[in-house]
Image 1 (cartoon, one colour):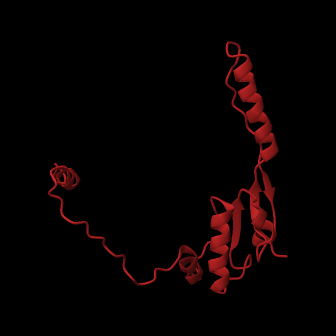
Image 2 (tube, rainbow, N blue to C red; image 1 turned 90 degrees about the vertical axis):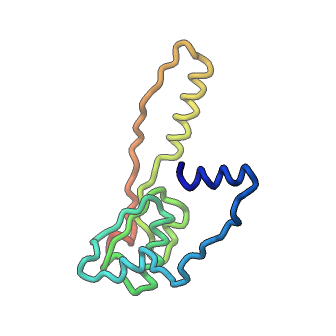
Image 3 (cartoon, rainbow, N blue to C red; image 1 turned 60 degrees about the horizontal axis):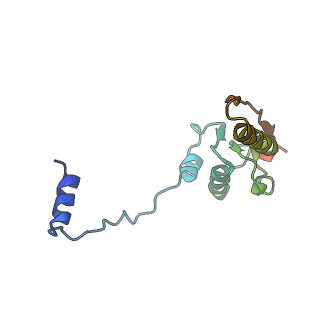
Length: 139
């Protein structure tokens, strides 16, 4: 029996110990962007972020630390959200074909709803588009 099971059994019998919240270390931890900015020779040439919000957050940390984008490091995001084009350094990103995705999703759902016996699942690939802006290419 592990500690969690033992605690649960005590809780059920009404013998639980009071919960003690452990406070995190009060020292400020450096963000990944700040740590990346601190690298000089070992800094990568570019970062591809999982989405535009992460890329914009990284961009903000790097700019605050004095890193020049894209001269010192290039950043590319994914999603092409509205803020990507209007960032302090316009963000290069991968744009998904949202209208095509929506159209195909509706078509597939309607097809399955109207012809269940004849419906076949499909594997679709809709090509994304690279939108090159200043964060990955010197102006």
